Length: 121
Image (cartoon, rainbow, N blue to C red; front, side):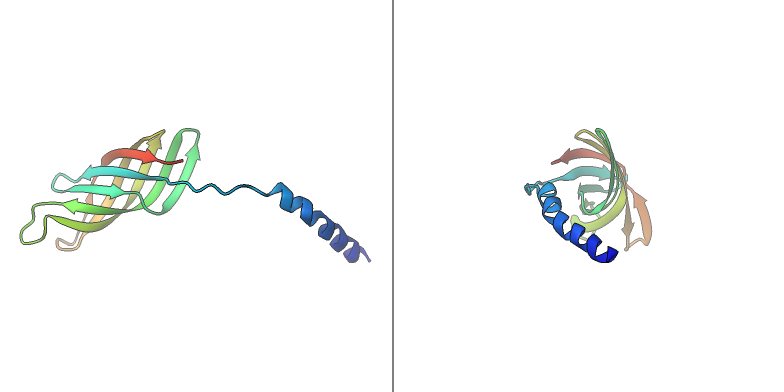
């Protein structure tokens, strides 16, 4: 009997919950663009997927950073795609990042601090 009463109450409250949770979907574009260097190469990063913590205007995130690596390293091309991973700290629209890149040809990790801009919400 009690289970039936609970089910009736839940069933009757569903329309109220659906109305209370109804929100308009608004598409938004967000991300970061950053330039970084390891002293040898220049990386142009576009912020990829990651975990983000927000406190007011401040953001701290751990991201994967799809990048283009520009370096004069014959016989390789001047620009090569690269994937970095690292930390980004943002205040309003300004971004400071510390991504790490693995250079397979040298079998080493490179740290490439950089600055950039955050766009979107």
